[in-house]
Length: 124
Image (cartoon, rainbow, N blue to C red; front, side, top):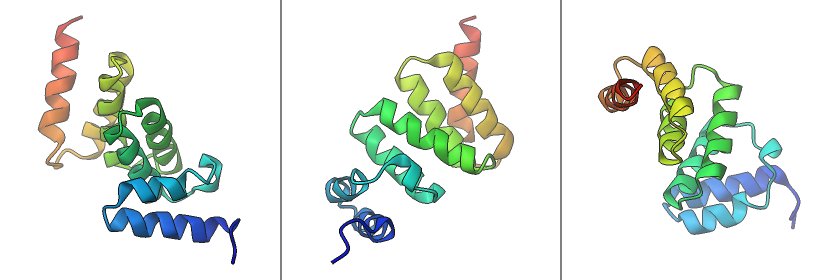
């Protein structure tokens, strides 16, 4: 009934994501422009799906927007850093991972981030 309603499109995409039906989730999310999405969880989820589909540039775009909306969003920085590293953009990856480590020292991902940062800083 409302094919252009952005909130409905987001809700359907999120519903498919919650069902782990990532293919259908992306079909709905792809109907939107990134500017239409202001929820960091949705941005993060689209970034994760994109990363898992080896769409690294797209993933970076969504993780970056999530961290711009909420600069305290530690998991967004972790995923952003790991995605940069997957793209061999190590300087950007290390910066994002350091921000993650600063924000979430008790995270279960802290040691992984620390290992990546130390490995690339040792190469200098």
